[in-house]
Image 1: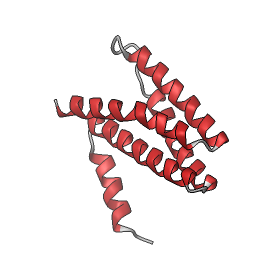
Image 2: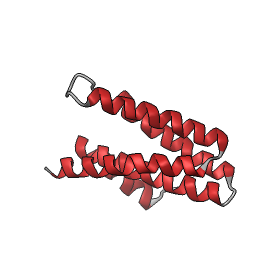
Image 3: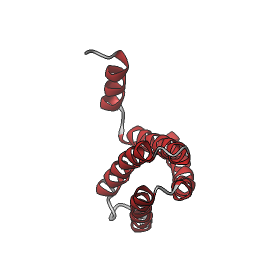
Image 4: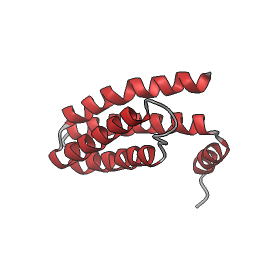
Length: 120
């Protein structure tokens, strides 16, 4: 079935530049973390871990596309991504909403920094 919203999102991703794609990934990562935390706090472990699974995929994608030779801070950013991935996996296996909230606390300032960089 043709879905206008799905087509719009696909077109937005296909036409976005690298900086915009990065900010879109971070925005979706934040959304996944928010949804996971809400679901886990509500006792919906299946729904929460599903959202965490998608968040893990995003972090893995960020890791895979990070060129550690491109700039001095890239290795440190990779270590942050590695930490996040480990914490997201742990939060999923334990159903720990507080761990998800802590991950969001790490991701939010990164997302804001990338938004500011993309605006330049």
